[in-house]
Each structure stands twice: as structure tokens, then as C-alpha cells.
Image (tube, rainbow, N blue to C red; front, side, top):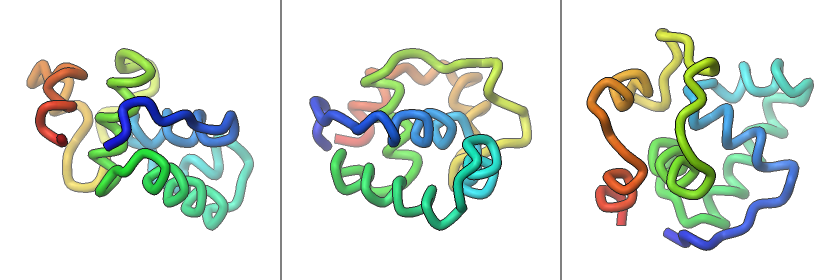
Length: 102
């Protein structure tokens, strides 16, 4: 995973929402973009960063851009099979994410 990867401005809000548990459909609704565009952006970012999946990408985002925005996390939102709220409750830090996904 490339810790120093730089994203284009169009990618950052997409990854931010994804990292906070939004689905591609919800991100598209939030940003007024087609779901297919969101999926393409996510794939582009995964390739840029070298992330294996969305959870890996979320950990990279928190490592690179900072802490979780609690106001963005409805309890029912999830990333893949891992509830982001569970990550928060477990006290997983950005460094833990980096170590786990090297």
C-alpha cells in the first residue's frame, strides 16, 4: 500500500464517504453522481493506493487524512463485512490499520 499516494480532488469526497460506511449508491446520491461513476472512482483509487478492498482503502484514508468524522456514521452503515462502528468501539487507530494491512 502506498502511504504517500496523492488523490485527485474528485476522489477525496468519494473515499471519505466510503470510509465512513456509505455504499456506492449512497455516495452517488450524496454527491449527485451516477453509481457507475462512483464505482469507477473507487476502483481508480484502489489502484492508486494499492488497496485490496474497501476496508483496506478505509484504513488508508484514516491513516492519510485523519480521524473518523462521527457525524458521518449512521450506526447501520458498513464497509464490506466490517461495521465501521465496531472499528470505532474497538478503539482501532490509524496505526493499527496500517499495521494490519501492510
